[in-house]
Length: 94
Image (cartoon, rainbow, N blue to C red; front, top):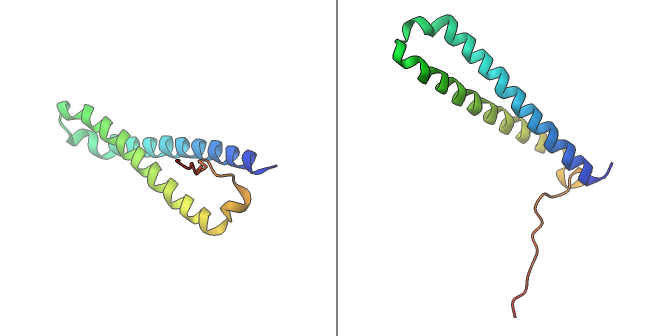
């Protein structure tokens, strides 16, 4: 496999991983909410609880993704296996 295929597979794998972490963290937060907090929150605040759980799961997935990416970048030589996504082109103005 060449660098472009490695880059594409990494992006696809990272996206699937990020979505799965978001779903798992959402389920965990929702189960914690149902078991411990649902009876203590008034009826009017329950819709906000769902929104907060959703935003917290996105934040957790972002933090886990960043932590794992930092760990991966320490272990793998990125320039050896992956192609850069954005290439800087030097344009000369006359």
